[in-house]
Image (cartoon, rainbow, N blue to C red):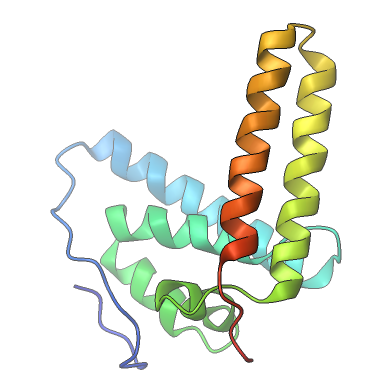
Length: 140
């Protein structure tokens, strides 16, 4: 279990990874996600919360130390604690996430000419959009 300064944070118990390659891969993805999340704080079109949530998911499976650092960070934790505690994500994060997702789905559908893939991408986008939009919005 990761320990944090914030007692409200729910942490996940995890088994140590037996596969070092997977552990290092998850650490790398987590680090890249944190970097993109930090850039997203500064750039209005790059979403912050989804990248930090991805980093938290990677860290909880690979490094208790990095996970503890992320959920107790004075700036970065405010973007993910509400979601991790079941309180949802801010409306601004929803807008950025939905915009980015629909943009990437549209580009993907344009690149792949198979109508079956385009229909599948549309279905995925609709389901994920419904899930994201129905999440509660915490008061920050």
